[in-house]
Length: 334
Ligand code: TRP
Image (tube, rainbow, N blue to C red; front, top):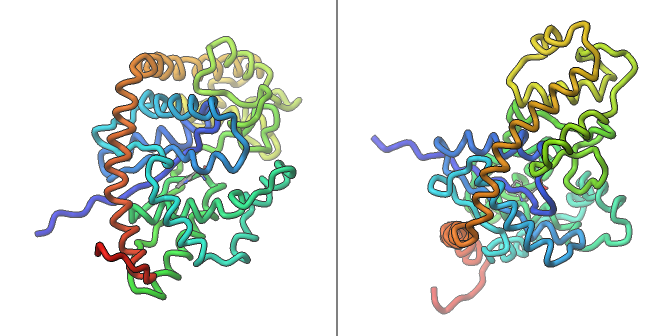
């Protein structure tokens, strides 16, 4: 009997700053759970990052740090392929081809493009617009079966499916049609200062807890988190701040809403916030110690990235060659 093919998983995070606990709880932690059962490609989406202006030295540093955080979070480079998108040229190459199979009308509908254009009104560049096509290339190059993403990226995965189906329809089966995987655990972590918004890496205020925040900073940010005047720790519609803190506490400790509500019955928000802060700081402390260990060994990190790019390139180039052949590019070497 044929051995069951391991399903292929691809995902990525932009190395546009230090990762947040939202990135950890919603993405990285789930990725580590998948590394034994799936063939995983986890990338640092640095090509996507330059759709918003970056300081070159900071981007370089963030790439290295993000790679170290991936490993510190428990990703094992022996089991997965961890790589930097810009080190695998096939991403840019396929993106161009797919640009020609994507309609402007489709791109115009992308809600993230609309949001980002509003936030960066002085730099609405072509890359921001075709960003989802590059993301489709990321996914389709590896013939991914599933793409673990947050809710805000589902629309992009849907577009990747549409592009894949369109291309397959014109030229015969070329790409596997991927599915978005929004795990139950991808607890939606909101900003502490405005819990109606997603917690964002690019926020500068106290709304975001970064994976590398020291304990006192974590405690302070959570103490200052926006809540309501009801004073009772319980989940309810409209209690955005408390719901968010309950999401965080539950994601970190594994406790259910019921357990949390009982634990803090009759106690105030202050006590609850302290418990959330301690739990988060504990979790992050462990990751930070590992992070420091990896950062102290740059040669090892570099080696992981070089090997990752080689492995990724091998797979990606196979798909790219197939695509080039199908669209009719002439290559005397073939
Ligand atoms: N766009 C994703 C984000 O900002 C990052 C990303 C780039 C990605 N390429 C991807 C995620 C491919 C999943 C698959 O969160």
